[in-house]
Length: 274
Image 1 (cartoon, rainbow, N blue to C red):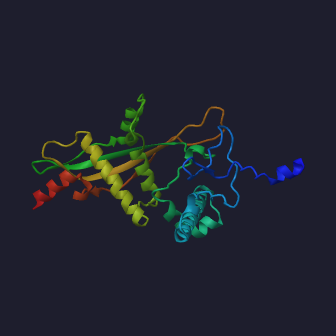
Image 2 (cartoon, rainbow, N blue to C red):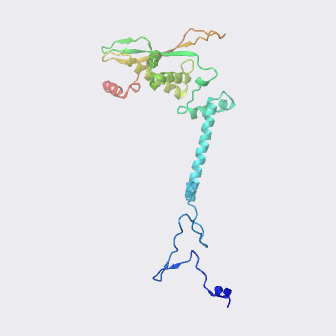
Image 3 (cartoon, one colour):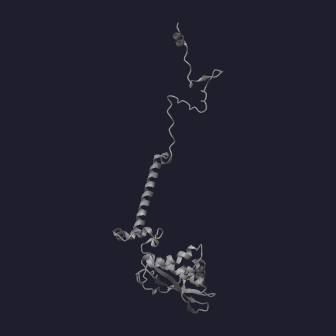
């Protein structure tokens, strides 16, 4: 018998992954691999699938719902961007045919004001003034002088590093709202016109009270508002000719109702009426 026969008769050496027997005769798991050496893959065992994440981890029914929600959000975003574009774009065929639909979408939450970036920005100074008709405690009626509300807001902003939003925008935006919702004869255009009247009336009434025009026991019966618009003179190097004569727009007298007063005063007025 040669050496080859001897080797052939010997039992094969167990592999690294073979099951080892413990001293008590029980089978034991193979020893762990040495540090830094990846374990050899076991044959016949498929790899575990990677865990799913995102929408793929949902059940089919919820996957459909999530896809529909994403599609709805995408469509809404596209419509919103399109409406904003039509709102700020110059007049065109689309805005002439569907201008009301665009306004209904934009106002009042998404209103855009691009006057600062327009090719021809506003070149006027607009001052809003108000006066009131007051009934005193003894029953007589008197009319106050005109209070320049815009000048008082300007004085409060001038030199103030942190002016309030009310001082900067309340009166100015309220007047812009009124002018845009009324014609030149001060006739309201639909519901927006009526809302703008109530808004500017409340502001005027509260500002007049803030001026200290009311004596003890006096009440505001009516208020009147007007605007004074003056063109800004062009620079010396410009050939543009504009008139610097102020233009006045005076609104009719408005009666003050309990709805125009703060909640506490309105309740007190109703109690006195009863």
